[in-house]
Image (cartoon, rainbow, N blue to C red; front, top):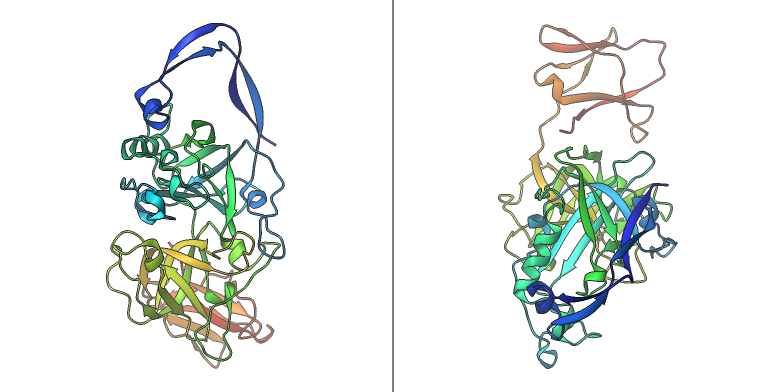
Length: 403
């Protein structure tokens, strides 16, 4: 396991320390103080994996048994301007008038790319922690100026000044994480004290986005037999299947149709942007959430969507429901070329855009589909493949390639 150094100060000499303006804004009572420190030692913090950090029990609640601090690595798969509005919006407690109103928020997701790891983790900040009902103190919220400084701090590499963007490979030094809604988030535990900060460090700029996993709704939800447009999530505590497997990662869900799109609006709130439902036309239903940018009109007909699997169960103790797709890109589906099988066992299809389709085979219509390894021959503008009569009965389909 990789070790990470976290540096702390040990007493050595008495010096008068004048706080910065930023510190004074965050802690008005703190002007100057006597700091007894000079020598430094480093405490080793262990490196954590996404698969371990996001482990859950049979109720979908966190089963992580690690300790803080730790470090974790991943590729950033969305910019902070995609999910939540970070525009400064300080709101006082005001005798409870702004109870629960977080104002500005900031969020990104990093996805595992290291060998023997999978999944991803959300990093989150909020401005008005003081408006939480159990805090009730506006002094424990970020002022607008302090919030801007905090967002700037997590948005760039402290060593190079590089502005983080999707595709950057980073390491995060984590002092706090909390479980809520079905996933464990890296955050400040609702506390503006600098010792609650997480720090993001650049490993490799522009490494590139992970390839989205091509999946169908059947990988995420079960059919709703009574046709009530109910989402029936596949929950797997081992995180080998269902929404847990793909949580925090980029996917491409194929063959979708809009059921309703009341939240198809980049200007709506986070909650309202989640008020959209899609189906695969086979009584499976799944929630999708619109980003903070224009995706165009809600698609008509069948389409594919690329985005990030999120979970919002709305509970700190239950996490078996509430999976959704945070949409980043819409791809209007293309009609697959028609497959023809001649009497002499020649399987053929139109060669136009042949490089966009993969031929797959299965032993049953609803069996496991696998790519056909043999390359077809193009003759007279048609892809042709000989099906040997000695082969067992097979079913074939063309599946569009992901980008």
